[in-house]
Length: 470
Image (tube, rainbow, N blue to C red):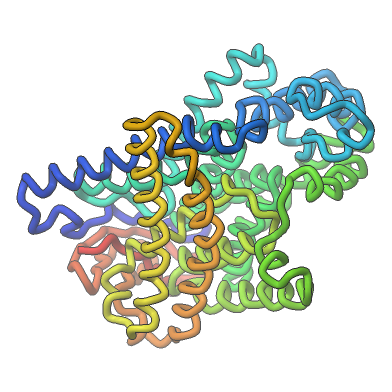
């Protein structure tokens, strides 16, 4: 059995340390203002600016709801009739040319394993359930990635910051499956890091229903497991076995579905309406070799940081794949672990060189600029109705730049770090042997977390976790 390591509640003095009650109240008020203004922008200003292209619930939920309903009836969700019905509902046109670029059911058949509770409901009821589930799943995923801060004040600030992002608001508006998969990937990482490898593999296989998100997390986890095959092979065996079962089950329900799905995926780039960010940056030149280099860097970083800082390896992988797949703003929700990692490492980043501080500062500057822009436009629009629409594109510029900023900062961090023990300051280093208990002590805050575990081969196993800044 692989070692089971439980990491205790994350400690640290947190944001509230040294702040008077008045300043704490002021900070909470600013967080509340950012939250309210971002949702006002998402529900009032952005739809007015987008016009006929404004997001609707049907765009994000109807294809999945209808497709999974067809699967439950034993019919292919990739049929032309299904695509035409989606086009009629979304009012995208039913001509041959329109259908080529119309949204459709673009998921593997085994998505029904996750969506059947919605598919059996009327669409109106499915909308409400999906809305509630989207909010709850995102909230749950925050502590699963890296644990909650110890103080309730810090928890409120972190939660408000996450829900204030426009990609989050857009994903919730659309009831996007992205939120479900971000939560499932967080569960996968949490169970893998705490030694529940079989469960982690099973949930990871379900995440393959949205492969463009899953690969960014499962690739570092796969390398993490391969490099300690004896202790962690259960994860890969469970992942492969569950995925094989899902594929065989899908084939039994809808024979021949795989070829139809591949054909649908080829059309995905046409109706998704966006190119990968790397293709846009390079103007279509040298995209393939640059993409290969980026994937190679993911493998290298995942290997180097697999035990020293697994969350960083996942964060870097997520940032890279954000550049390689078609750019859709709501998929930026998957950058959540990278943003949380940067918060956790804030003290270490402040001790880095000026150029690294500048790169990480750029990520927070962009996030702050987006929040300020949405707050300003919302207040302006409330005072003078309709005025906020004049500059409605400003927050979208920061959304386009943010993945690049995160990638650049994380790449610089990876390039500057070594795996020597002295370079791993700030990591929680808990060495747990057979039937022993150890105290994991953080170099920055002195926080102590109890960990217990048992190694298969009797050797000590080292687990390093990050910590919230003190």
